[in-house]
Image (cartoon, rainbow, N blue to C red; front, side, top):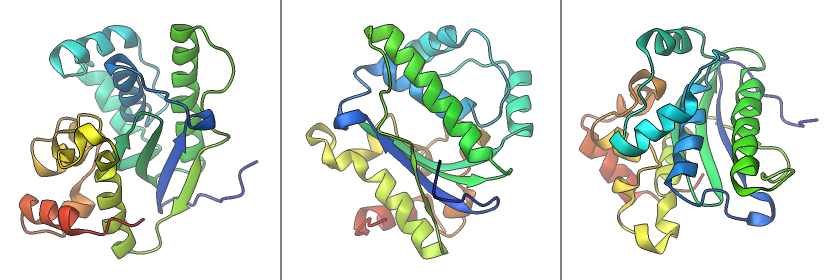
Length: 212
C-alpha cells in the first residue's frame, strides 16, 4: 500500500531503481523498450506490434506508430510527461496527474511491462525494480524548474556523458533545447514558456545547482 496520496492536477517526481541497485538497462534495446513504455503508456490504449516499433526506433530513431493510435493515446491520457531521464540502474519522470489513480495505473503498466520484457530476455524471474516507485509532490514553480534541471543533469554521473548531457539519447533534455522528437507525448511548454529562448533554458540548467 502506497503511503503517498497522488492528487489529480498536481506535478510529481516519479523515480525508482533496480533491485539492489543493479543495472536494469543493459543495451539500446532495453532503453528503447522502456522509453516506448514511458511515452506510449500514458493512456490505457492497447498497442500491437510493439517489438516492431522498437526495432524501427533502433534503426531510424523513430517510433512508427499509426496516427490514429497516437491520437487515441493523446485523447485518453491519464498523466502528462514534463521531463524524463533513463539511467543504467534507475529512472526519473516528471509528470502531472490528469485523472484520479492515473499515476498508479500508468506506473503499473510501465513497470510491469518492462519487468516481463526483462525477465523474458534475460531468463530471470521476480522483481527487477526496488519495492514500489517513489513519488514526490512538486510544491511550487521554483521546485518544478529546478527539478527539470536535476533530471536533465543526471547523465553527469556517467563518466562517458559528463558535460555531454545534451546529447544523451535517453533524456528529454535534447528535446527541450533542440528538436522535439516526441511531439505532444512530452509537454515542455509549462517550463519553456518561462524562458524567452531555448538557449536561456540551457543556461539555466547548466548553471543550476540541480537539487530536487
